[in-house]
Image (cartoon, rainbow over all chains, first blue to last red; front, side, top):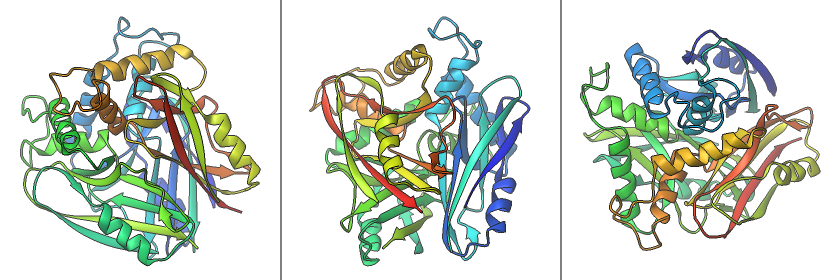
Length: 136
Length: 136
Length: 136
């Protein structure tokens, strides 16, 4: 089974999408299988991270801002604004795809793991995740 | 087929887990398929890397220590000790999931590729990998 | 279905391999499925990135050169030349595996996404990608 999951991002940073993904997977009623989440963009990415302390997410956002800063002098590409090239770099440093096993009808996420869409652009964006589920 | 593979880590750094994973996959006797390894944690991750020179692994460990250092002044989150927030960052920079094709009954790993659990916390931890295998 | 896709790299940097991968996938005539690309090396990796502006790729190459520089004083491992240890690090920071859903007979790549083999060694190399496709 496949579907496209539209996600509206309102700001730069980590947006939890665990519920939308789990809800779709649950509706397919698979007992054993594999769920794949694929981000169809080059300036937003995926991350599985701590779903408890909000400070962890703020620190992660701060880290990627420091390690791949907005700095027009550092990059040749600036057609789409100063946040675009850092967005491509932050995407390259994280993931565009995640596959998660399903066992006993549940995604094998750890207790503290949430699935996040990492928006790297400053302005709100319409993003799409492609989901694929196999199993029985 | 799915299973949970418990791994005890004794120290920070790269711990090879290729044999445990290959042994389980081999026991399923799949000729053509896909093996997925999923790390159920946010302060440990997965890496496929050089299985020959130990110096490569020491240099990799040193690199991630430098690029995401323990530095209480750099992070807001410090509830779980100074090694926790760097652990989340090092996890974000590497992988929590790997899928490896199987052909002619063998994982398609390259000659020099080993599968490593990358423990980012200082103290020993009980970790669990979720494995999923499909094929025939 | 599985195959091995040989790729000759002529230089360090991003080499687009979308066409070779899409051509093989299309030939299998799968309507709904999942394609996995696996890089069998530890000094070359995979990246899905912008397929339009060449400046984006030059900036990405420049970024990884800066963040993991050739610097013999920084690494213990130098048996294979000064470009080898940075190659392992750049591989660790990017991906060795990508899985892409297929829907309505087409890979779910976004409009601006291309699949790249990221060669991290300076000299030409013979690389191999393992491809796996499941579906119907």
